[in-house]
Amino acid sequence: MRILLVNPPNCGRSIPEEQYGIDSFRQIMKGEPLALEALAGNLEEYEVKIIDLKAVSDGLMQVLSEFKPEVVGITGTTCEAKTVLSIAASVKEFLDATVVVGGIHASSDPQFFNTTAIDYIVIGLGKASFRELIDAMETGRGTRCIPGIARTEAGKSLSWISRNYSMSDLVEERPPRYDLVEEYRESYTLKTLDFRIGYVTSALGCPYHCSFCVMANITGGRYLTHKAETIVRDIGLLGDIPIIRFADANTFGNVRHASELCERIQDAGIIKHFVIDVRSDTIVGHPGLFQEWKKAGLRTVVVGFEEISDWKLVLMDKKNTVATNSEAIAILHDLGITIVGDFIVSPSYSEVEFESLSRYVEENQIDLPMFSIMTPLPGSPLFESMKDEIVNHDLDYYTLTNAVLPTRLEEKVFYEHYAHLVNTHMAKVKL
Image (tube, rainbow, N blue to C red):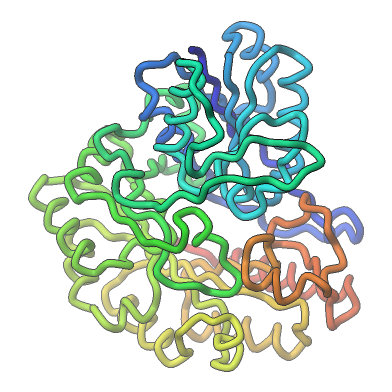
């Protein structure tokens, strides 16, 4: 069986640019489609190809014509969901193939993809369930009882068996097929420094449940870690790529696991720079761990500070405090570790709140601040609590840089302040 896996193009839209001519800095990191590489790794008995439409602007029709896949799998985030539908429709028009959709939006709002252009939806972590689906199709067995797989029935409500995620769903013995994106490898860079970046998974899911986050939908709320030897193996498969980005929601969610991994990396003599996502309370609770990781090559940490007031952190169910954030910043500065700080700008911000956030970033010397706009993503607790307040339901704008809720300031003024915040601090970035 021939299987084509598709990473959709960059396709999110911008209200400030389209309506007000306001520009701002774009995303500066571009990474490989690790989820598709992982899926492909568990399909070694089949003929598999990956096309990354974020790396190449077109070519899908040519690949469909030449490769003639029997199954086309498409992944996508929320802002890519409509494009995924469009790709699925194009595939169906072009050839007689089974179309399967997965990814974070499929896991958060599977009903969105319950259309005639799509045959199956992978809900949650799909490395094992997608393989089970392919095997069932290959042998002619029934597909309706595979946990985590929904058979579409346009016009009806979806039904499926929920998957009880466990370590077996990681299928660790089957490494990602990094080789399938080799033709795009040079485009996976940190553009400002022209450094090549390779992606590795060390953990899936997150033990926390912040109101704005949808990551729990991938693993049913569980936190699963790859074995240290698996992670070291995958780092080795990326060859001489100098920067390894752990593509996890929370890399150090299990401190004992993080410590073991650090030791294994040092014992293996691996010389890399590592980029990880961590919580500030993990930094404060385990500063020694970060000292050891600095020796092992930890260069940059991405920390979700989110807000600069305790009561707003409570509203986000962040289970953290501003004091803890400040202490974590001090620890990282002392260690000489670069801080990428994630902050969430609420559409309810006043001019004073924009100024306060800008001042906080300046005073705390956040090396690379990243500012998103609070967005109630389908499948998140925030969506359930605020869905009646949403004024923009076009998922193309759910890029985390558009206000889909009413703004407190006049909308153009809000975006002017947001663009000024982003551009001012990005202009000062020195990594």
